[in-house]
Amino acid sequence: MGLGMQIAYLGFAGSSAIEREAGVELVRLAGVASDIVDCRLTIKAWLDGAGQPVFDAQLVLLTRDFEQVTVPRNTDRDPSVAMRDTFDEAVRLLAQRSLPDPL
Figure 1 (cartoon, helix red, strand yellow):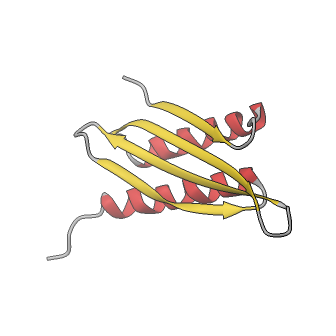
Figure 2 (cartoon, rainbow, N blue to C red; figure 1 turned 180 degrees about the horizontal axis):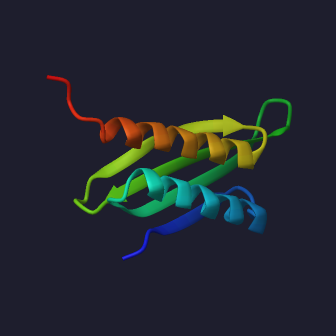
């Protein structure tokens, strides 16, 4: 069974470049945690007080044991940066999760 991913864009159309980057990040994520079976990436856009676009990215991961891992949101003016920061945070969380408990 392969690792699946759904991407939801809220407030903007998204792009094939973001989808390609997300695919690369998904492969990196799969290398850290082999029990992840589903990945849901949401990227939301809104305008700040000055009318400039801001992008918010969040991941929700599902494990083979039906554990849901919600990765904290990351925000940036560039949707690719927000997404990469979120995947970086996911890698950190998953790496910590796989560490043995100290005695």
